[in-house]
Image 1 (tube, rainbow, N blue to C red):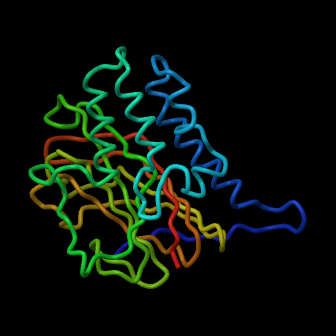
Image 2 (image 1 turned 180 degrees about the horizontal axis):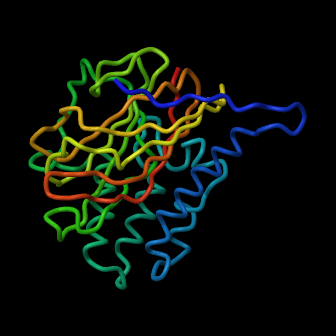
Length: 254
Protein backbone atom coordinates (compact mmCIF):
# COMPACT_ATOMS: atom_id res chain seq x y z
CA UNK A 1 0.00 0.00 0.00
CA UNK A 2 1.48 3.25 -1.13
CA UNK A 3 2.27 5.89 1.43
CA UNK A 4 2.68 9.61 0.96
CA UNK A 5 6.08 11.24 1.50
CA UNK A 6 6.88 12.71 4.89
CA UNK A 7 9.31 15.55 5.36
CA UNK A 8 10.62 17.67 8.18
CA UNK A 9 10.80 21.42 7.70
CA UNK A 10 13.96 22.94 9.19
CA UNK A 11 13.28 25.67 11.72
CA UNK A 12 15.31 28.59 12.98
CA UNK A 13 15.24 30.28 16.36
CA UNK A 14 13.59 33.66 16.56
CA UNK A 15 11.67 34.28 13.32
CA UNK A 16 11.30 30.64 12.28
CA UNK A 17 8.39 28.96 10.53
CA UNK A 18 4.98 29.84 11.93
CA UNK A 19 2.90 26.73 11.20
CA UNK A 20 -0.47 28.19 12.16
CA UNK A 21 0.08 31.15 9.85
CA UNK A 22 1.05 28.72 7.09
CA UNK A 23 -2.10 26.69 7.74
CA UNK A 24 -4.29 29.78 7.62
CA UNK A 25 -2.69 30.76 4.32
CA UNK A 26 -3.30 27.29 2.87
CA UNK A 27 -6.98 27.33 3.85
CA UNK A 28 -7.45 30.90 2.64
CA UNK A 29 -5.85 30.08 -0.70
CA UNK A 30 -8.13 27.11 -1.25
CA UNK A 31 -11.15 29.20 -0.30
CA UNK A 32 -10.20 31.98 -2.71
CA UNK A 33 -9.83 29.47 -5.56
CA UNK A 34 -13.20 27.91 -4.77
CA UNK A 35 -14.90 31.30 -4.64
CA UNK A 36 -13.36 32.57 -7.87
CA UNK A 37 -15.86 30.71 -10.06
CA UNK A 38 -18.66 32.85 -8.63
CA UNK A 39 -16.66 36.07 -8.32
CA UNK A 40 -18.04 37.65 -11.48
CA UNK A 41 -21.63 37.52 -10.28
CA UNK A 42 -21.62 36.89 -6.54
CA UNK A 43 -22.38 39.46 -3.87
CA UNK A 44 -19.09 39.62 -1.97
CA UNK A 45 -20.90 40.49 1.26
CA UNK A 46 -22.34 36.96 1.14
CA UNK A 47 -19.18 35.14 0.09
CA UNK A 48 -16.61 37.13 2.03
CA UNK A 49 -16.87 35.60 5.46
CA UNK A 50 -17.04 32.02 4.17
CA UNK A 51 -14.46 32.03 1.37
CA UNK A 52 -12.01 34.65 2.58
CA UNK A 53 -12.17 34.36 6.38
CA UNK A 54 -8.64 33.08 6.80
CA UNK A 55 -8.09 34.17 10.39
CA UNK A 56 -9.41 32.65 13.62
CA UNK A 57 -12.95 31.45 12.91
CA UNK A 58 -12.40 29.14 9.93
CA UNK A 59 -9.16 27.79 11.36
CA UNK A 60 -10.56 27.06 14.79
CA UNK A 61 -13.78 25.58 13.35
CA UNK A 62 -15.92 27.43 15.85
CA UNK A 63 -17.79 29.92 13.65
CA UNK A 64 -18.29 27.63 10.66
CA UNK A 65 -18.42 24.07 12.02
CA UNK A 66 -19.90 22.68 15.22
CA UNK A 67 -18.28 20.02 17.41
CA UNK A 68 -19.55 17.29 15.05
CA UNK A 69 -18.11 18.93 11.95
CA UNK A 70 -21.49 20.18 10.66
CA UNK A 71 -22.09 23.68 9.25
CA UNK A 72 -23.21 26.17 11.92
CA UNK A 73 -26.36 28.30 11.59
CA UNK A 74 -24.11 31.13 10.32
CA UNK A 75 -22.97 29.02 7.37
CA UNK A 76 -26.51 27.75 6.70
CA UNK A 77 -27.80 31.33 6.64
CA UNK A 78 -25.06 32.57 4.30
CA UNK A 79 -25.40 29.64 1.88
CA UNK A 80 -29.20 29.94 1.78
CA UNK A 81 -28.91 33.70 1.19
CA UNK A 82 -26.56 33.11 -1.71
CA UNK A 83 -28.70 30.31 -3.18
CA UNK A 84 -31.77 32.59 -3.09
CA UNK A 85 -30.21 35.36 -5.19
CA UNK A 86 -32.30 35.89 -8.37
CA UNK A 87 -29.22 36.27 -10.60
CA UNK A 88 -27.80 32.88 -9.62
CA UNK A 89 -28.49 30.07 -12.13
CA UNK A 90 -30.95 27.49 -10.82
CA UNK A 91 -28.42 24.67 -11.25
CA UNK A 92 -25.89 26.41 -8.99
CA UNK A 93 -28.57 27.23 -6.42
CA UNK A 94 -29.58 23.57 -6.29
CA UNK A 95 -25.94 22.53 -5.95
CA UNK A 96 -25.39 24.92 -3.04
CA UNK A 97 -28.48 23.65 -1.24
CA UNK A 98 -27.53 20.02 -1.91
CA UNK A 99 -24.04 20.59 -0.54
CA UNK A 100 -25.49 22.24 2.57
CA UNK A 101 -27.87 19.31 3.07
CA UNK A 102 -24.95 16.89 2.91
CA UNK A 103 -22.99 18.90 5.45
CA UNK A 104 -25.87 19.20 7.91
CA UNK A 105 -26.85 15.54 7.56
CA UNK A 106 -30.25 16.36 6.07
CA UNK A 107 -29.54 14.78 2.67
CA UNK A 108 -31.77 11.80 1.96
CA UNK A 109 -30.17 8.41 1.42
CA UNK A 110 -30.84 6.34 -1.67
CA UNK A 111 -29.46 6.09 -5.19
CA UNK A 112 -26.42 8.30 -5.56
CA UNK A 113 -25.80 8.51 -1.83
CA UNK A 114 -22.77 6.92 -0.16
CA UNK A 115 -23.07 3.97 2.17
CA UNK A 116 -23.56 4.91 5.80
CA UNK A 117 -21.39 3.49 8.56
CA UNK A 118 -22.81 1.51 11.46
CA UNK A 119 -22.65 3.94 14.42
CA UNK A 120 -21.41 1.10 16.64
CA UNK A 121 -18.23 0.70 14.58
CA UNK A 122 -17.96 4.13 12.98
CA UNK A 123 -14.54 5.77 13.39
CA UNK A 124 -13.92 9.35 14.50
CA UNK A 125 -14.53 11.55 11.45
CA UNK A 126 -13.26 15.02 10.61
CA UNK A 127 -15.36 16.56 7.84
CA UNK A 128 -13.75 19.06 5.49
CA UNK A 129 -14.91 22.66 5.89
CA UNK A 130 -17.10 22.97 2.78
CA UNK A 131 -18.45 20.75 -0.04
CA UNK A 132 -17.01 21.19 -3.53
CA UNK A 133 -18.52 20.98 -7.02
CA UNK A 134 -17.71 19.82 -10.55
CA UNK A 135 -19.73 20.94 -13.57
CA UNK A 136 -21.09 18.47 -16.14
CA UNK A 137 -19.95 15.56 -14.00
CA UNK A 138 -23.19 13.54 -13.81
CA UNK A 139 -24.06 12.08 -17.19
CA UNK A 140 -21.99 14.78 -18.84
CA UNK A 141 -24.65 17.40 -18.13
CA UNK A 142 -25.27 17.90 -14.39
CA UNK A 143 -23.13 19.34 -11.61
CA UNK A 144 -21.90 16.94 -8.92
CA UNK A 145 -21.32 17.85 -5.29
CA UNK A 146 -18.23 16.38 -3.65
CA UNK A 147 -17.61 15.83 0.06
CA UNK A 148 -14.34 15.01 1.80
CA UNK A 149 -13.49 13.71 5.25
CA UNK A 150 -10.54 12.41 7.22
CA UNK A 151 -10.26 9.59 9.76
CA UNK A 152 -7.27 9.48 12.13
CA UNK A 153 -5.87 6.00 12.73
CA UNK A 154 -5.82 3.39 13.89
CA UNK A 155 -9.04 2.57 12.03
CA UNK A 156 -10.09 -0.15 9.57
CA UNK A 157 -12.55 2.23 7.93
CA UNK A 158 -12.49 3.65 5.36
CA UNK A 159 -10.58 1.18 3.19
CA UNK A 160 -7.68 0.62 2.89
CA UNK A 161 -7.54 1.50 6.60
CA UNK A 162 -5.18 3.69 8.61
CA UNK A 163 -2.67 2.50 11.18
CA UNK A 164 -1.29 4.33 14.18
CA UNK A 165 0.23 7.71 13.29
CA UNK A 166 -1.66 7.69 9.98
CA UNK A 167 -4.73 9.51 8.63
CA UNK A 168 -7.14 8.18 6.00
CA UNK A 169 -8.74 10.61 3.54
CA UNK A 170 -12.01 9.89 1.72
CA UNK A 171 -13.72 11.75 -1.14
CA UNK A 172 -17.19 11.06 -2.58
CA UNK A 173 -18.64 12.60 -5.75
CA UNK A 174 -22.37 12.40 -5.00
CA UNK A 175 -24.71 11.21 -7.74
CA UNK A 176 -21.94 10.02 -10.06
CA UNK A 177 -21.11 6.71 -11.70
CA UNK A 178 -18.74 4.31 -9.88
CA UNK A 179 -15.07 5.21 -9.60
CA UNK A 180 -12.77 3.89 -12.32
CA UNK A 181 -10.01 1.49 -11.32
CA UNK A 182 -7.30 3.85 -12.56
CA UNK A 183 -7.17 7.13 -10.65
CA UNK A 184 -4.27 9.44 -9.80
CA UNK A 185 -5.79 12.83 -10.48
CA UNK A 186 -6.93 13.80 -6.96
CA UNK A 187 -4.53 14.50 -4.10
CA UNK A 188 -4.52 15.72 -0.51
CA UNK A 189 -1.72 18.09 0.47
CA UNK A 190 -1.25 18.09 4.24
CA UNK A 191 0.82 19.71 6.98
CA UNK A 192 1.15 18.58 10.60
CA UNK A 193 1.23 21.79 12.65
CA UNK A 194 2.84 20.10 15.66
CA UNK A 195 5.67 18.19 13.95
CA UNK A 196 5.91 20.26 10.73
CA UNK A 197 5.87 17.03 8.71
CA UNK A 198 4.12 17.44 5.37
CA UNK A 199 3.28 15.46 2.25
CA UNK A 200 0.99 14.89 -0.72
CA UNK A 201 -1.25 11.81 -0.78
CA UNK A 202 -2.90 10.49 -3.97
CA UNK A 203 -6.43 9.08 -3.65
CA UNK A 204 -7.30 5.80 -5.34
CA UNK A 205 -10.11 3.30 -5.84
CA UNK A 206 -10.36 0.82 -2.96
CA UNK A 207 -13.72 -0.87 -3.53
CA UNK A 208 -15.83 1.64 -1.59
CA UNK A 209 -19.35 2.09 -3.05
CA UNK A 210 -18.66 -0.17 -6.08
CA UNK A 211 -22.11 0.61 -7.53
CA UNK A 212 -21.54 4.35 -7.17
CA UNK A 213 -21.24 7.14 -6.36
CA UNK A 214 -17.52 7.45 -7.12
CA UNK A 215 -15.63 7.20 -3.83
CA UNK A 216 -11.84 7.24 -3.53
CA UNK A 217 -9.47 7.20 -0.58
CA UNK A 218 -5.85 7.27 0.52
CA UNK A 219 -3.66 7.03 3.61
CA UNK A 220 -1.00 9.48 4.79
CA UNK A 221 1.76 9.11 7.38
CA UNK A 222 0.73 12.32 9.11
CA UNK A 223 1.85 11.39 12.62
CA UNK A 224 0.02 12.68 15.68
CA UNK A 225 -0.96 16.32 15.93
CA UNK A 226 -3.20 18.93 14.35
CA UNK A 227 -3.18 18.41 10.58
CA UNK A 228 -4.37 20.92 7.98
CA UNK A 229 -5.20 19.44 4.58
CA UNK A 230 -6.24 20.70 1.14
CA UNK A 231 -7.93 18.34 -1.33
CA UNK A 232 -8.00 19.08 -5.06
CA UNK A 233 -7.91 17.39 -8.44
CA UNK A 234 -9.79 15.04 -10.72
CA UNK A 235 -11.87 11.93 -10.10
CA UNK A 236 -12.16 9.31 -12.84
CA UNK A 237 -15.56 7.57 -13.07
CA UNK A 238 -16.74 4.86 -15.44
CA UNK A 239 -18.38 7.66 -17.47
CA UNK A 240 -15.48 10.14 -17.60
CA UNK A 241 -13.42 12.52 -15.48
CA UNK A 242 -14.60 15.29 -13.13
CA UNK A 243 -12.38 18.07 -11.81
CA UNK A 244 -13.43 19.49 -8.44
CA UNK A 245 -12.67 22.85 -6.85
CA UNK A 246 -10.41 22.66 -3.77
CA UNK A 247 -11.69 22.12 -0.26
CA UNK A 248 -9.81 22.15 3.05
CA UNK A 249 -10.05 20.67 6.50
CA UNK A 250 -8.37 20.58 9.92
CA UNK A 251 -7.91 17.19 11.60
CA UNK A 252 -7.09 16.50 15.23
CA UNK A 253 -4.97 13.39 14.61
CA UNK A 254 -4.27 12.38 18.21
